[in-house]
Length: 297
Image (cartoon, rainbow, N blue to C red; front, top):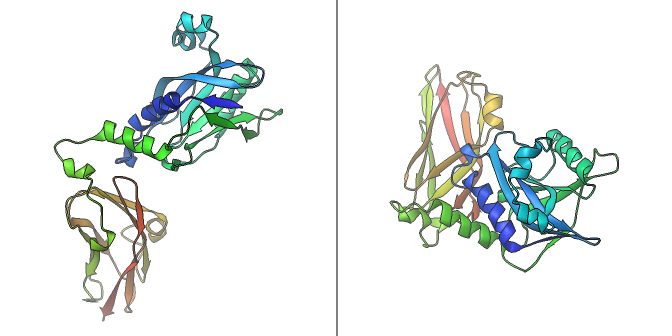
């Protein structure tokens, strides 16, 4: 069993959020750290997670002993603290060990059979779930299995994430972004507009707009489904499989799409899987939108 103090969890969560701003998922980066602790016969007590770095593909090379051990004060080693594993993040990707992660974990378990990998995805955090799993590899050193852990005290994981997010990404010049005003989803209006009738060979322009009752951070995500459109100007199959995101603080136009119908028959543009979320990560499913345009010869 592995014990984790609350302050260690929040320290690594802060490091994760510094590299994965919940308000800007386009620039998320993975980050990594060394896990220190004390090993007893019955359990491992984690004492610290030391941040190392961040990037698109990160791992700890434990063969670089000078760099690794320079992160640990001699006094801590004398106090019985050792490297018990490593921690890294998969922001928005889920909890698993990749092929590279497995090879890294193999090195750690060669160093100590009880060494482990902690994987955190901040988007998976809920009130009662920490957002991470702990893994070791089986005897064949190739198949990950989860390891049980517990905290030294009970607390609300989601509240911790929201508090740290507010501390890191408070924007004083636009205080309404973190307004305590409750979002009324029924007061938010999203509209899909465009010509209901156009001549053949004329491009069809479609506009997606949103009206908010007051200035407030809102994240919009959706997918587009179309019927009777040519492959140009972009592959329809790519558009259909893509989830589109917008982050706004006021009413306005979200997107303007231009399509080219391929036949003289009705053309349909549908906005589906439409979700809204606010600064506190509250999620609301919205009704699908549809625009029908008749193509005239």
